[in-house]
Image (cartoon, rainbow, N blue to C red; front, side):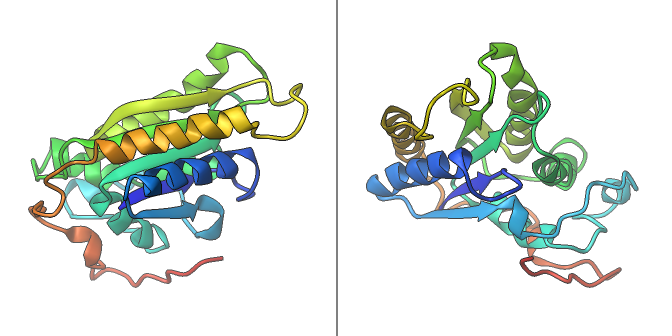
Length: 215
């Protein structure tokens, strides 16, 4: 399953439209797809408790426990986000920060995570300065590294504040579909046989209960 994350806090707009085009392209290549929007889930920011240093998973009981299995078990990942003050929106950043348990799995516990999955970024910005995308690219690159995802493609679209509608343009929609098709074509061929060492994301810690549910 190729997972598409819509990082726009409003849930609609150019980012979602481009992500839908990308997932449609992936579906044309026979891939199963799923789109989730950060605005539909209650996810708190990381509290830096370092609980995950000595435990599996995260001590914060919220909707991130609904997202963890999707991130762990998808065979491809596409993140779409607008540029907010030269970075990713705060809701999406919370999701990225809360993936620290996966980082601990790799770097401290040396557990097996899904290898070599393809990933892509779609980013939009009001201005047309290339430097505005750095603060979006780097957090997503760090997320991909943490999840064992290979950064295979990106679609960066700037100048939306001065570009007349419609947004996205037909050409941009075509570019997004091609991106999705690329991710679908290079999905890991061993996805059906992969077995994680310890799938903690399917087990709620004993120190709390998860009040998961969409907003």
